[in-house]
Image (cartoon, rainbow, N blue to C red; front, side):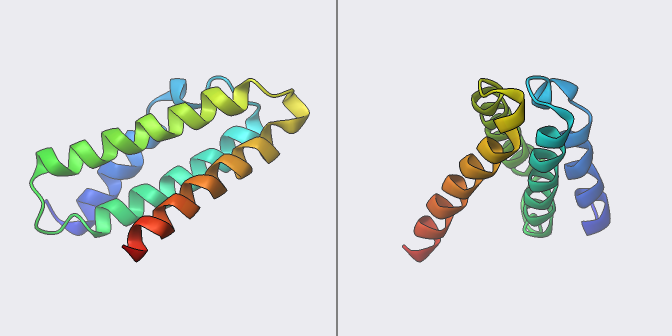
Length: 102
C-alpha cells in the first residue's frame, strides 16, 4: 500500500465508527476526532515497512484509546466534556512523551 493509501485507510478507521464518540457532545467529539485523526496520520506515516496486519493492529489500538477517552469524558456533564477530553488527551500525550524519552 502507498503512503497516501495508508493515510486514507487510517482516517477511515477513525471516522467510520460513530460508536467511538457516541457518548460525547458534538464539540467534545470533534476535539477527540481531531486528535484521533492526527494520531492516525502519524501511524500511517510511520507504517512504511510494516505489514498490513501491523498497521491494522496499531490503528485498532488507537481506536480503543479513542473509545476509552470517549467513555470517560462522556461521564462528565455535557458542558464539561470538551475540557475532560482535553485533560485525558494531555495525560495520554504526557505518557507518550515519557515513553519516547526511554
